[in-house]
Length: 209
Image (cartoon, rainbow, N blue to C red; front, side, top):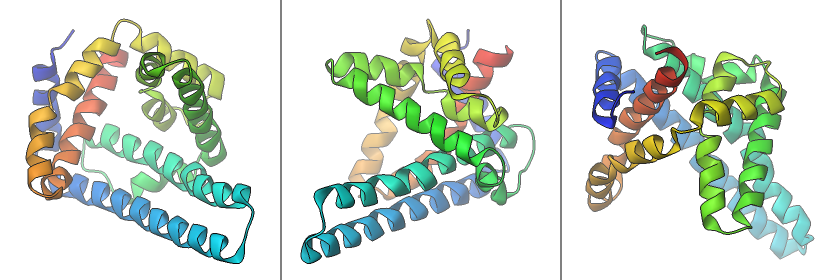
């Protein structure tokens, strides 16, 4: 099994000559997510002003995540997987909106729901479950029609014994996160492609090597 250092080395190699396209993909994802958050905030404020029911406000907050953010996560994961081998069109990040859209929404929603329910038992079980399902977007990107239960089960199977390694990989970026924090978040924008590429390499190590 590869160490975090080796996986990050592979990530750097996969970004060679492709970094700025990857940066643009991550920037587009952040822009869409931010725009949705602003839109939801405005709708909630209007809902309160007009006296809408609380449940309506909650739905307006959740729906963009379910129907836009979740398939977009799958698309970005798929982009980074394909980017490992060759330069890939930026439009590839929107692939789940063309193929397997409802399955991506349903599977990602079920994953998030299970993580939430486990979190109710205390924080640690929720974190363990979150790491168990960490590979779900990558599995869906490669298998857009795989049923939700099979996708979740497969993620837990390949992550069994590897949760701690994935946690250590994330932890190895802590120094970069601190630099991003002290640069008012701007540094984080340039770090995201590195993290995404490392996560894609980790998934491929679990499924190929």
